[in-house]
Each structure stands twice: as C-alpha cells, then as structure tokens.
Image 1 (cartoon, rainbow, N blue to C red):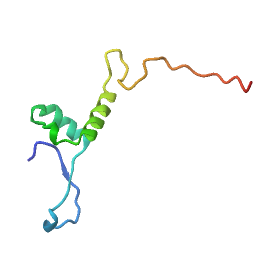
Image 2: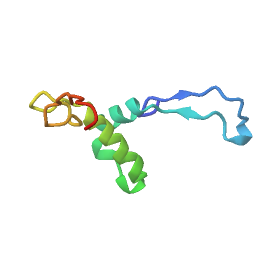
Image 3: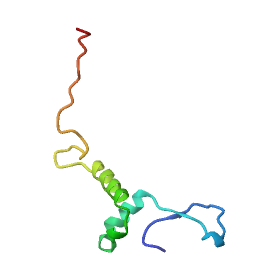
Image 4: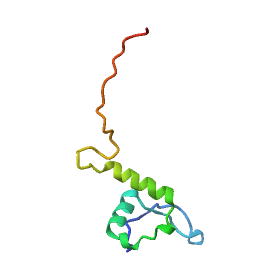
Length: 85
C-alpha cells in the first residue's frame, strides 16, 4: 500500500496507456501532509494549488477568539433602507 489514500477511478484505460488513473482527494492530501510533513519537497509542488489547499484548510479552522480565520473581525450590521432621497 502507498503512503497516501487513493482509489482507482475505474476507467477503461489499457496497460499500454499507463493503466487506470488514481483519485486522491484533498482530505487525503491534508492527512498525508499532517502525518508526513518531513517528507514533502515543496519544490516539486504546484505553488498555486498548494497555497489554495492551505488557505482552504485555514479558513475551516476556528481561531482562538471563536471565529473561523476567514470570518470578518467587524460585527455584521444590517443596513436599513431609507428610500431614495
């Protein structure tokens, strides 16, 4: 077995075409990064994809003040409509 969770896509690719394609989810990538941080060579990673993945994961993590990192620090106020003037 490999170090990262993957599943076959069950395509009809022939061995001459390189065989079936593997599907690796973002959750599997995140789990791999957490478990094997020391084995990651960022020079071999697409930087935009990696930053998008990290940004998405950070937005899901609550900060110490109870807000998610992507939430606004300002309280949300309702705007009142006063009609055209």
